[in-house]
Length: 457
Ligand SMILES: Cc1cc2nc3c(=O)[nH]c(=O)nc-3n(C[C@H](O)[C@H](O)[C@H](O)COP(=O)(O)OP(=O)(O)OC[C@H]3O[C@@H](n4cnc5c(N)ncnc54)[C@H](O)[C@@H]3O)c2cc1C
Image 1 (cartoon, rainbow, N blue to C red):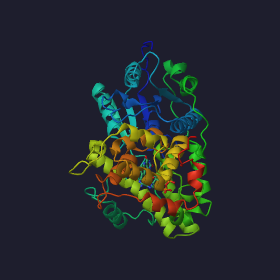
Image 2: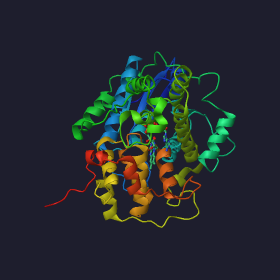
Image 3: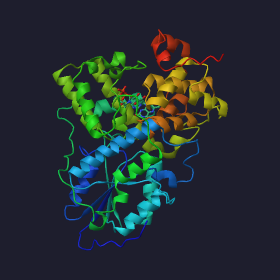
């Protein structure tokens, strides 16, 4: 990439926003902060793909390329964000590993140096690896001011003195001290900036940085197939789904349907938009409160809050336990007695185990990037108990494919099921026959996702 000296001396500041899991303009305290700080300056709005590749041990558990469904959902989310930023007078700059093999960290560092960036705005993260990369950047440019906002959780910081060992203790304390579901006032939403400061002058025609240009390059190389599910990425689609969900009767029966293996309305399906930040959890909670006020408040509506608290718990769990989130023995004293067996790992991934229900779920995951919570529990339990595999390889495969991949919820749930996490009962094994009878009594789900091994002649 050619070096171009920056000429920003006339500007008060050059602010750079590093988007990650905050891909929206509404209720985005990070974008708001950047827009307020840069009124007389210039603004660089950046998404740096796979920034953590710079770290040595990132691929330890066979992380291969991001699955197509996850990639497509992410690209839709970024395209929508880009459109919103263009409407406001700026645009999204996108960094990915380029053909000259410059890693993303180096490309980003070059931009920071060329543009004489004075301030960097990010959202607070539970992501240990992403935070390590931010530390590297901070060490490289100690003169830059960093501004960190909360955009993905209900609380700005852990609202308790320390994180309780179990979710139940956490929930009870939160509900006693901060019952957000029944609080008098709605949760405050950050205003959406109407306009944004422009790009630095010398960046205005640097098409090679623009998201559209980078994406068309990418699409040429590795075109994602149409995603055969109802998930469409982006803030606009997320907000439409939020409206549609709370305009329906589905919330009033959520608790009785949430364990189903399939069906769009049986659970909220907020997870993909929540995970990459196209939807804010505050806006979801406000809609839930409105539903309770205007429609009905019952066990089911309460249970949506309950599940959002699980998400919150795992976020603070990841912040508390840092790199232990990825350790084989997790936060426990002893490692499990499982191991990596390549042939069994391949069977699980390809949906060719001897367990039709597991195969069906894995086929659904590979094709759509989504499986229900019950499906995740079954395939993870099979992975750990029936196949006796090292849980970290399963978590990594989920990371590759889930459109709602979230570092805290994914690794936290896997640890929980492997008996090395926050489960006071130690270890959970699901009886796959019983679960099949209960959740797929007529075999429809297994047929739809071809869970029965194909018989060869
Ligand atoms: C092994 C395993 C891995 C998982 N990996 C992820 C992941 O990477 N990303 C992710 O968002 N969820 C993960 N989950 C949690 C859960 O399965 C999904 O959040 C849920 O299935 C998403 O569908 P939904 O939005 O319809 O959920 P709903 O049932 O409608 O729940 C509403 C919201 O609550 C949150 N939530 C629900 N259950 C959980 C839970 N057990 N842990 C944390 N948050 C929860 C989610 O944000 C979800 O969108 C995992 C669960 C397991 C067992």
